[in-house]
Image (cartoon, rainbow, N blue to C red; front, side, top):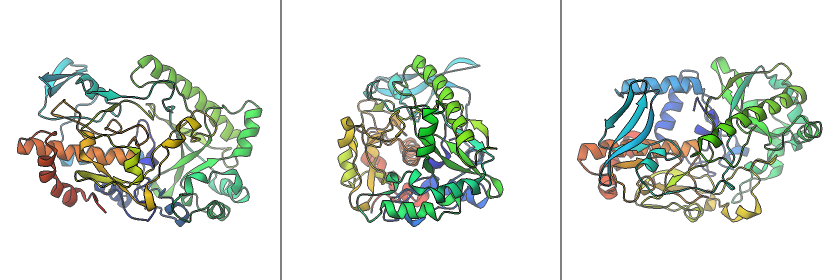
Length: 439
């Protein structure tokens, strides 16, 4: 959240295209605590966004980080920061600890249950789990986010109202309801509050002029999201301004090249906004994230592989741990269209049927053959199109994995005994976490 961004997508798409809530639990708890303390915006469910299930509940990522530390203190969590997990310890096929390196040296930490929430499945790979990953030629491009202040929002909004056709609308047109381009353009042409838009993508004519002048690069589109600060102040958060492809998260040399190139692309993009876009003349960068935003990486092969067919059918599962309504096959590409799906992967795009939501099954967190290990976040078991990489989805699996691990320890059962886990966890998830698991 605070090291790779973005602040928006952790708290986006919490409701489906019918307006029904998908995500509660720790997402809603943290949002409400931040909102009450003045560090979040309310659920921004404007109709032209709501019909696409693409609404925001923006939070301040720096205060979010402070809140998470407070919550860990409240629950007596013992932290160990500035530490790398470099291996695991095992008894046969059962993981019973991790090997770490830090300023204390190299040490083993024993555990009854281990959760891999690295995002890229690094711990699962050390444990010998079966892993899958798209090849280096097709992997989605990664990015480096940055935040800026000093934007003259009224000047920018005047430009948007005068030029609505210069902005993206496709992400706000849902195939299973009456959402349409005309309503989106109407919202742009009448907008006087930047939070009504939530994200602003496009600037097509200005971008194309800049590109001809050598003031834009060909690897991403132009646009940004929002970051709320104290007192109702709004900053712009850029997470699509750099895109570097052909980079595997399992290769440090490639990641180094990606980081360097992303920084170069961001500087080109920032000069464009400063010199071409109304309202940015006096704006300035306040923060550059310290880590890459890795869009794609390895996934475990679990007891169940979640698929795009499950997304399209709004599949229900006996072992559901939560809900989502985000489409399958939403791939980024390193072009000025950013989200323009190539013909090679056109069949991967699948929307949930009838504006609905699908269940996320517990078994996607349980690797085959390797016991006492759970995966949470991006590395859970899916096919490529159904990749559960968006932060609201990763927080659902993260909370579920934590609850399951704790109850496994309490009851003396293993994560692979999923029916036993579910019998003990279901009440916990529905009562304590308030996660909707069926509709």
